Image (cartoon, rainbow, N blue to C red; front, side, top):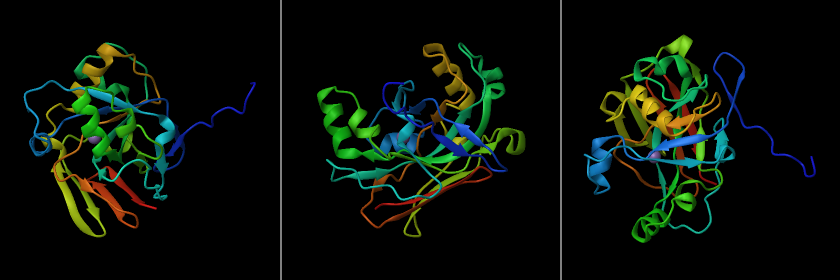
Amino acid sequence: MVIPGPRPVLVPVRGGGFFPVRRIYCVGRNYEEHIREMGNDVREPPFFFDKPADAIVIGGAPMAYPPETADLHHEIELVVAIGRDGSDIEAAAAPDHVFGYGAGLDMTRRDLQAQAKKAGRPWTFAKGFDQSAPLGELARASEIGHPEKGAITLAVNGVERQRGDLADQIWTVKETIAFLSRFVALKAGDLIMTGTPAGVGAVVRGDVLEGRIDNVGTVSTVIA
Ligand code: MN
C-alpha cells in the first residue's frame, strides 16, 4: 500500500463477534405517516440513497454536530445486515440472505436536503456526512428471527419523538431486498436502513438520543 489504508468498520454483534461493513443502502420513504409529514406522495415506489461505511458511530459513542447545517434531524430505522451475497433475490428467499438486524439512526442535514431536492441535486451532503449513522449492536436472525412487527421508537432527552411499528412499513424487508438486488449485487457486509416512521425533528448539541426496536435492539448517541 502506498498510503495508510482505511480501517475496516466493525459492528459488535450480540453474543459476541463483529460484523464487517461493506456498503450502507438507505430506503428514502417507507412509512406512510412520515411520507405525509414530509409532504410527499405515498404512492411512489421506493428509492435509495447511501452512506459511506465509515459514517457509522458505534456503541453509544457521541456524534459530532456536523458543520454546514442548522437543522440536524433524527430518523430511527430498522437496519438489516446482509450475510450472504445475491442478485435478483426473490422476496421469499430474502431472509436466507440476512445475517441479522439492528437499530440505527439516519441522521440528516434537513436544510441541505431541502436545497438538494429543490435543485434536483444528490443527497450526499444531506445524508452521507461524517458520523451520520449511529448504530447499535446487531442481533443475529438465528436468535431473533425476522421481525415483521414491533414498536420502533426514538426519544430525545427522555421524551418520545418518533413512534411507529415495523408492520407499517410500506415495503417489507423481503420486498426491499428483492427490489434493491435487481439494481445492485448485494454482498455480505452490506447494511440496509429501511426508512423512518413519523416524528422526525431537529436536535441540538447536548441532546441524548435513544432509539429502540422491540425484539431487535437499541441505539443511542449524544450530540457533541
Ligand atoms: Mn431515513
